[in-house]
Structure formats: C-alpha cells, structure tokens
Amino acid sequence: MRTVGFKAATLALVIGACSASPGASQEPPASAGEGQPFTTQVVADFTSPWAMTFVPGRANQALVTEKGGKLFLVDVGTGQRQEVSGVPGNIRVAGQGGLGDVVAAPDFARTGNIYLSFAEGEGELSGAAVGIGRLVLDGAAPRLENFRVIWRQQPKVTGGGHYSHRIAVGPDGKLYISSGERQKFEPAQDENGNLGRIVRLNLDGSVPNDNPWARRGGVGAQAWTMGNRNVLGFAFAPDGKLWGAEMGPAGGDEFNQLERGSNYGYPIVSDGDHYDGRVIPDHRTRPEFNAPEIVWTPVISPSSMIFYTGKDFPEWRGQAIIGGLSSQGLVRVAVDGNGAREVGRVPMGARIREVEQGPNGELYVLEDERAQSQGRLLRLVPNGR
Image 1 (tube, rainbow, N blue to C red):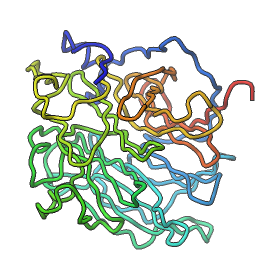
Image 2 (image 1 turned 60 degrees about the vertical axis):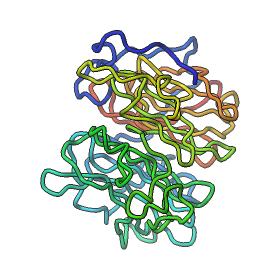
Image 3 (image 1 turned 90 degrees about the vertical axis):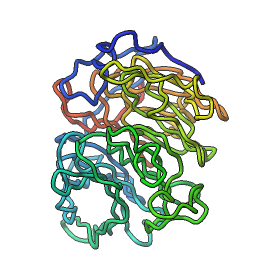
Image 4 (image 1 turned 30 degrees about the vertical axis):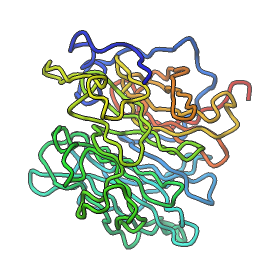
C-alpha cells in the first residue's frame, strides 16, 4: 500500500473536500508541479451531465447522460445534440441518484445494444438498476427500443447516496457493475446482498457459474468483490487487471486492484473516519482485508476513470486517468503489475464528473454542473496542435 497524505486530523478538512455533502466547500486543486499540457475546446453544454461513451463504429458520435433522466446523441465534431427517446421513465432523481452510466455492449455492431444505469424508487426506498436496450440510429430521431432491466441493487433502502452504478465490460466478456453500500455501512459485509461490492454478470444479467461466490446462490452470488464503499471510477488496465477509484468516508479515498473474491474491509476498516468523528480502524489493523494501493487524505473525490491508450499524450499512455470532483482536475496514476503510485495532477478549475477517451485516442471530460462549472463537454487538445 502506498499512502498519499495522512489520516484526517480534523473532520472539517475532509468534509470540505468530499462530494457527498451538498454545498460543501471545495479544496483548491493541487497541481503537483505541472500545468495543463493542453487547451480545451467546448463541444456542448449539458445540465448535470454524468457519463459518456462513444458509439462503436461512429467516430464522431457519443452518448451523454444527464442525471435528470435525459440521454443525448452528440456529434463531437459539430456539437449538435439529439435527445434519445425510450429512456426509462421511472428514474428517481434525488440526492446522488438519477440517470447514471452508459456503455455500449461488446456485440453492439450486431445488436445495437447499450447499457444504462439509473436510480429507481419504491415509495421512500430506492436502489440502482442496470438495463439494456437497442439504440436505433436509422431515422431522424435516435431512440432506444426494447429496454429492460437486467440487474437491481438489493435490498432497496432509504436515502439518496452511494448508488455507484458505474459499468464496465471486461476482457472476459462479462459485465461489471460497481454497487455502493448506499451509506448504510453494514451491507458491504452482508454475504446475502449485493450492496458495497463489485458485481460480475453475464451480458444478459445472469450470474456466471465461475463467480467467486457463485455457490451462495441468490444475489450474493453476483459479487466479484465485497467490502467496498462507493466505487465511482473503475476500469481494466491494458494487462486485463481491474482497478477502482473509491470514495472514502471522512478521508481515505482509495485506489484498489479489484481482485476476484477479495474483501476490502469497509466499514470495518478504512484509512478515513466516520463523518460524526467516530474512528474507523486503519487497514493495517486488519491484514485479512485487501488494503488499497493508494490512499488519499485530503481526498480527491474520484468520479470516473479510464486507462489511457491514445497518442495525444504519449507520456500518459498506460496510466489511469481519474476525474476529480473536490480535487477539480485529473489525477494520473501509474500502475506497475500489482503496485500503483500517483504521478501527477492536472488542474481543470472545475469538478470533473467524467473522463473518456475517443476512438482515435483523443481525451474528453464532462464538467459537473455546480457553482464554479457549467456542465460542459470539453475536448482536450495537446499544446502545439
């Protein structure tokens, strides 16, 4: 484990940096000695954008979600936007909940299928869900057909935090979903639920028979890892290993290798503490749990993550690029085998909700729409181009 910073000395320091507290003050971004190696070009403006992905086979077309429940098809060359119809109408927009991630299915060229995550509710209860539908682009207006839910957080609980619901398709052809513990703590250690973990599914939502806890049956069999708090950035490295950037409590954001069958210890251990000041034992006190490779205190508030493989920024190739909310920029992490270390930060002057690589290796970011940012989709153009 490599630690950046130290465990919070005061509660106020970390609450100010954590994105889980609406209206919280934000720490100024740390430049780590480097400025912007790019200029930014505004592609389009959105209202509370959350995620984006490029449409396979269409280099200039991307899909962008807005937390409020809208999905857009965007031409990144012209900035033209078209709303996609057929998005589920039962989205619960409250707290951190709303329309979330969007990812193309690996067989998109044949099926046209995409995955969407969102929060749904039943009375005062809510939980994340993931569904699949066919994106149709053969007419004037793009639409989503035959959308159906294939996965749900269980149980649904009160509150509007820590849905996580990021989606990734692995090199093994399986669907991986980050499932937050919904600020309820104990469910992350409940073997019979699916909160507070990384979920691994077949593309149709069924449970692979080679999952680490497949013999449990029920929703517990869906788990790839457990003991996670709120993984908002995760991606597969070029060598096929899965890594995640996870929001800690009051301090202790984590960068973890998300290994098959591992328990990461939350809420039993964390290098942060509870918001009410109660101490959580550090990872070093319980070596049976998988400890993070990097810990950040003050926190960076990770929102998203990719492994960069493009040519625009050759010095970044192979690194994890993490979008930062309270850190207001990009955090670069070098991964070497099973180890990791932060190698730099690039200040953006705004909360970064999403970082994405285009099909030709170009980089894009979505700003989080808050007081100091405008919810813009930006293209990062290398200096000198």
